[in-house]
Length: 284
Image (cartoon, rainbow, N blue to C red; front, side, top):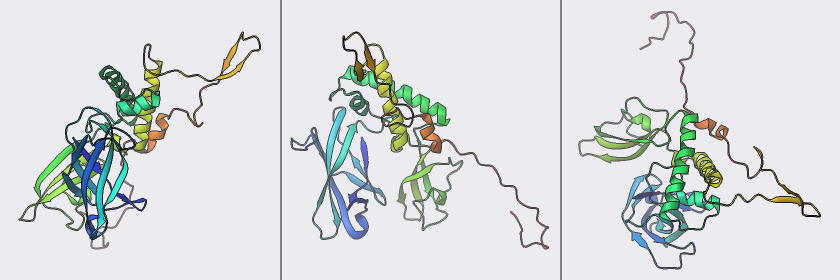
């Protein structure tokens, strides 16, 4: 398993490497206060690109863990301990949300059982399928590696347009690159929409998976309707209506994902130009 970590320092994303700092260690705990024993630890860390570091996680049982990352902001400074890391393992699956996050939305205490995990994974896949159908594109990117390639722009190696990647999607991310002595590179890409990194997709899938499981006969969670009034004789009870679209607490709608729909490109109509040499435009 892997975990891609972005350091924060002074309330902002920060890359310690240019200042001589280093990201050194990740400890995993079973409790949020991080007062118990360390369940697992790793010092296997690689700087993927500016501001992003990849930890190779040891094998641990599926579940929620609280992490503590130790790093040095710059050369000669004291180490910093980042306690803002929370991991739902395993990572790197084809699900954009975790069963633990859905269990939280349902009010189900952690840890969850294997049967509960299976039921919640099914609910996540169903909600995720709705997102895929609406966006008309997958929400799990494809990993592609180009080997021994030469960049178009040597000064912009982190930009996808600097590499000879054929048939680019409208979303391409350079994950990592490795230099060869002769000046070529091996480059790893993620091509397509990475739903697990989009907060709007994660929120939609988590909320709708939880609601689907709550409404399923025999499913987890309490419907929890709130009473608005009771008659004096106790003969009738009125319940508050569920929040409508736009109100606080309402379920997110598919319209909240509009900005992530696949872009359609059309050539712009250009004004006619006189042929060369009567025009400075030669074309290609």
